[in-house]
View 1 (cartoon, rainbow, N blue to C red):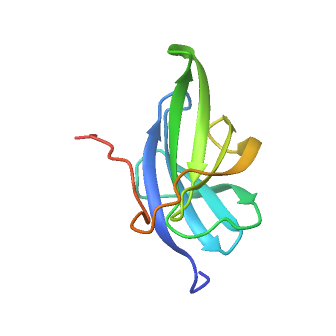
View 2 (view 1 turned 180 degrees about the vertical axis):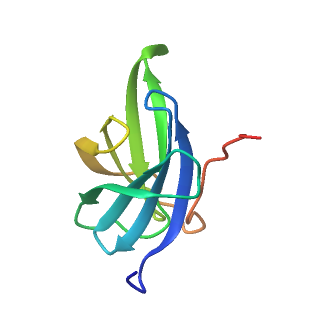
Length: 116
């Protein structure tokens, strides 16, 4: 493991029935892993984007309120974000980077998964 690798974000991807971990690997790179049981992890893909930084997070948002039509948002600590598709293994950016916040006191916000 590279000493820069850190800040894992884990969430459930229901369409694939897998747990997903997105991990910051180094400046400009995040790595995706999948798991059936939260114990064994398999490398699935890498995301490369200039300016991508630590503390990744990723959320699915319905387009126009339609839960059948979803876009994924991948963002970093500075809230640089990319919008795209995620198939349970690979995030494919369709747009970005975008800047979500320009405030001086906003850094590394994370979503909450209420998974008991």
